[in-house]
Length: 585
Ligand SMILES: [Fe+2]
Image (cartoon, rainbow, N blue to C red):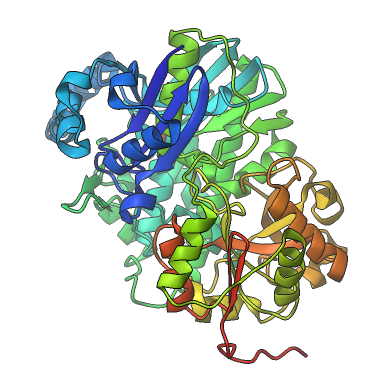
């Protein structure tokens, strides 16, 4: 039996995961604990928390697995520098920033308070994209699958195609820096004023408002080759380093300028984020997403030729593009996907740990992920004490009464903060740290935004649907337990789902089964039985901050915002008087 601590550190999405005897017992993103979005420093708090959850100490750790290997792809890096000597400085700078990793034990001592004599672990570095693919394959129920990883870049690679067999991940193809689908998306996002790390999802949401005005130009920006793709360097800056990312003193990621002067010549000035979005920006978003999908499908089809199976495991920040994932079943031969909830770099800690367990140590136990609840949980006593300390009135309800009372509030148009059980792993709230509301009230999107979320006007809210009713409501049946697929809503349901229906009649659904989360499932079912709509709005429990983790943050968000109801475990709290009367007509 091995105790493996996986970490993602000195990289956006800092996180820790603990795997014991082949089974992940805890996994947490550092941003949830230190409250710095996309934190990119050392994950000291999440390391301590996963050890606490697993009931192990530093002395017990056999291996520390990291989803990065500086020795990987060295030949390619050297070849690149020889061809582009001006980029040497960039590469050295990146290398320098990450040299702190060289002495991992010092970080454990200084940042986590470990006793140096307790640190007997062996450090294992796993190539970035192998860790990505391991994070998807070694949580899947399959012993054979095609593996696909795509992102901005990691260990000088931007896309990896693999054949996953038993405990082995065989690399079939790598795409190297500077050819990067992730960098393309980031560059255009930045040009249209969404330049923060992680803003790509916003632009994906903006795309349906645009028109295909720039199809020809995007074909010039990125061309398809027989087995990959090629970016046109004219449009990019700093082209080649592809690492135009820096960490500031707080550990936040900032993006350097990615677009070139040629982009400005072609499209005019980039949008200042403080100004309104114009039709040009929407058309750019549309054209980007459309071309992105062509390249994405091309790479999936290239993979299928090399690994002809209908099952695919997918990871890397780019596979968070749920719109493309929803279309892949019709545009590629793949029919079943397995994507774990932390598909981006946060998931590297889990992937690296599982890679060591399966591909290095060949441990016998094989894990199959049945839900995303790998984070901390809090006792009823802790919740009660938090409510009492904050002087929040509450009623403790039975399970049955809780379901009916909550459903009834949602039916009346009220907004619910829903806090239950273990926190989700990955960037999405999936029913344990969620804000829930009515999916079919035309005014609900504006109400949610005005009272709590304050998101951009064009961003849709997402639906959770009972898994067995998905096919009746959405035009595709493949389940989406972690909100990673977008499908069209069937015509007959569109009027009843106005709030979760995007402008192109789609929804980024979460399909929930009873096995995965019985209480949450039963709440959606109760609402469905009472209203005829087995769907709720599910959005993350936060207000412009990382998703809340503990009861104190839940109560604080409830009191700070105009949320109507807080359900904290079995404790039911309602503001009185209600913040403002809704028009129920
Ligand atoms: Fe990555």
